[in-house]
Length: 231
Ligand code: UTP
Image 1 (tube, rainbow, N blue to C red):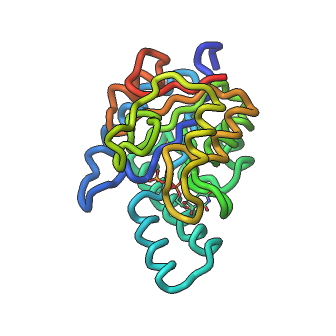
Image 2: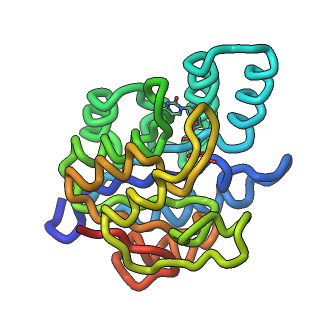
């Protein structure tokens, strides 16, 4: 690993991977972009559950499942999505989603790309990504999600929401703490993840994962469209 190419953890929202019923073209473009940016480093990709998780959690909730069981449905679907990205990446990737951090880090000794989904009930894959970055002593983390940055409030619900291009860990914690709890996708970045990036001092870039150009720029530490969270 060269000094300017440290191992990088990327949280990839499930909702950007497969938003439509029949659309694998994004997966192909994403896999190509990631492959050309490996260089000397390892990439650790933590994939979310997206639409499939939302459906399963909704159906489970209708059947009166408890929240921890609903979380398990989210974890399983995130691993299913990770598996699909593994297929798109081919032989450069560890062939299964790692189910814990030790496995992910060991796999990184043999493969340049390692994927994870969820781990335990009670948080989201953003928190998994933040914890993995902390374990790897990474200095930065990328959150590729379904909004093009951190906003003052939810831009899908509030037309006065304003994008914040540069913010501190504490400002992020304030914004995401207003979100709701419970199983299922909620806010732009998991509040637990926000606390972890603060304690581990991990610069975090938030961007729209479907904007492959911006995504690639962020990986390369070039100017990108999104938000930058620092200490
Ligand atoms: P996601 O990580 O996909 O939520 O986990 P998200 O980031 O809000 O959604 P997208 O993917 O960006 O659209 C989905 C659900 O799975 C459970 C939680 O219920 C979470 O809301 N989950 C996931 C866990 O309980 N533990 C995990 O480690 C991961």
